[in-house]
Image 1: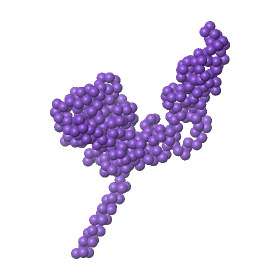
Image 2: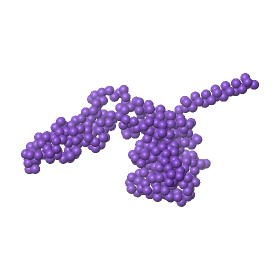
Image 3: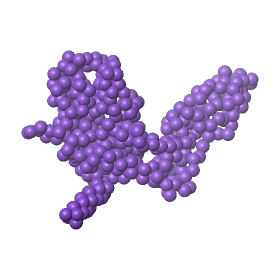
Image 4: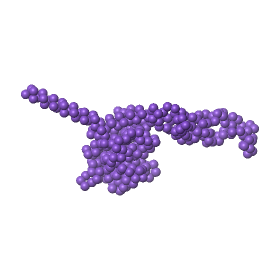
Length: 380
């Protein structure tokens, strides 16, 4: 009996070990890692494979709502009433009751943090009158964004019922959609919140994206799961001016989806860096002014200058400031002063113009000449 028991125990251990190894080596159905600023793909596997997004379908629901807030047709304080259908939708929820009214912003927060299906449906019905009409808006927006692999059937991403069709998207399309959502600071604030209260703090919502609690630099964004779709995540993170999006689809466990997203982000952070010598509206240098009421002007960048470079291929990357060493007054506000250029050898990687940050009138005889229209006499 002892031998039989020992053999049985050994078999259980071996089976468990095999299952553990299988889980350790599980691979996602598809993934994409994208530079959030430029949209450059840094890593991919089956990037355009169509797959159910599950709750990540709500990313489009939130985008449509926030675009209406941006254009002024809605505000985050707009009251949204819960229908009977929304209150019965099930799955992850904040337990909205029929007839309850909440500000749009509170419902969007519930969608981003708790993946609340009832809140998503309430928002959809408020915007379009019905879930079906809202789905039409979702698909139209997907087409406009170039999400060629995406077809929505619902505003929430729950598994399809009998006779229904699943929502479908791809890792590539999820990354593009995430880029659009990242334009909204409020969305990223919700997406990066570990927990928050709802209904006067009587309900505590925990963020379904565990990476924001465990991964250094994580900023969001959204998870998705149902049995047939597996565990998926669209993860965003920022380190040292480099913002990344990792969309990972179809893993067998929640932890594996987070582990795989973290691995992919780590690899891309290790492989790439950003040269960012100029930001829109920020000074990039100071230029002395002769013969003026001010001794100098600041050279202000007219745009962001940001260049993504692969480590190991970044030797010889230099930043050049093509601005004058001295200006002669008068100087006009926003007068062109030159450029900031990023270059590698003979290859120009990026350029942004710079301008003067202020007017500097000429003084003395230069001012006298200028006031009489003889500015051509002023050396430049």
